[in-house]
Structure formats: C-alpha cells, structure tokens
Length: 149
Image 1 (cartoon, rainbow, N blue to C red):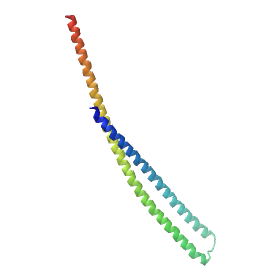
Image 2 (image 1 turned 180 degrees about the vertical axis):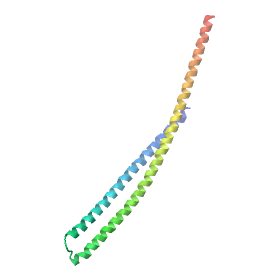
Image 3 (image 1 turned 30 degrees about the vertical axis):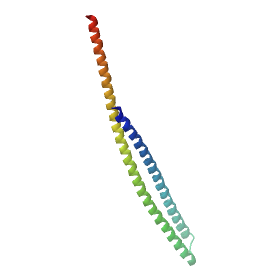
Image 4 (image 1 turned 135 degrees about the vertical axis):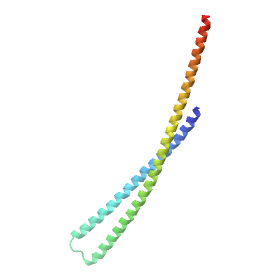
C-alpha cells in the first residue's frame, strides 16, 4: 500500500517543480510589463516636456515649426508603438499567469490526494499494529490461562 503514495509523491515533486518554473515565468513577464509601462511613462513625460518648452519659448520660427511637428509625429508614433508593446506584454503576462494558476491548482489537487493516500496508509498500518497487539494480548491471555490450569 505504501507504493501508492511514494509514486504520487514523485509526481507531486515534478508538479511542484513545474509550478515553480511557471511562477518564475509569470514574475519575469510581470516585470517586463512594468518596464514597458515605465517606458511609456517616460515617452509621455518627454513629449509633454517638449511641448511645454516649445510653448514657453515664445514664437517658433516657421523653419522650426515643420521640424517641431515632424518630431512630435515621431514621438506620437513611438508612443503608439510602445502602447502596442504594452498590449502584447499584457497579453503575454495573462497567458503565463493563467498557466501558472492552472499548474498551482493541479499541484494543490495532487497534494490533497497525496495527503489522503498517506492518511489511508497510516490508518492501515495502525490497524495492522493494533491487530498484532490484540493477537499478542490474546496469546498472552491464552498462555496465562494454560498456566493457571
């Protein structure tokens, strides 16, 4: 009967290792998403700062207006690109996180089954020990009864 829990124990160890790997992946994916969000924040702050400086500087010469507008378009394109990167990172993170949660649930289920197997095996061993003690007591009583005869 002991073999059942021993075999399952190995499966639980493998599932635990896999769950840990997916947890690490989810953590790395989350850190990447946060890094991309920070980049977007930097781009938006830079764009706002650039616009503010251009407004505060008074009149922009007509020769610079075209360059200014072109630069703002490039910044807007960079912001849009970064937003797409963030959407992709969010989707990747959610996929990895769901996988990790699935692995975690599977591990928890296996651990519950293993615990039940171990309890069942412990109860079986306890019953065997109790039976052996009862048999021993019975033999002692029989021996004592023969001694009295």
